[in-house]
Image 1: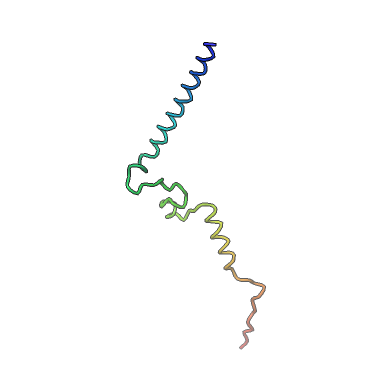
Image 2: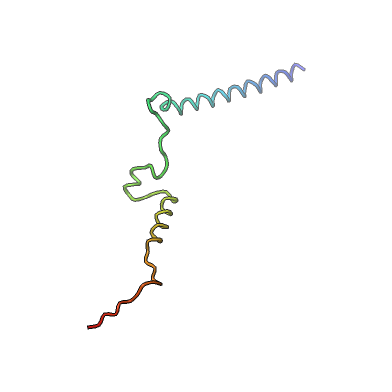
Length: 87
């Protein structure tokens, strides 16, 4: 019975240690957000990277939207009339 109690205490210690380590990690990740006035998480999205913007690179969803808009702007050749130019 004593061995079971010791095993339970050991498991509880490991769980508490894991919770403490996760809490320390979260605090470490959030220090800039918590301590800096108006702090927020950095934008790691492709569209938020100024170097990629300069090169004209965007995320796949944005590029898809742009290409779909370009297709809608193309001329509909079924309705094009050929002008008769005669001199």
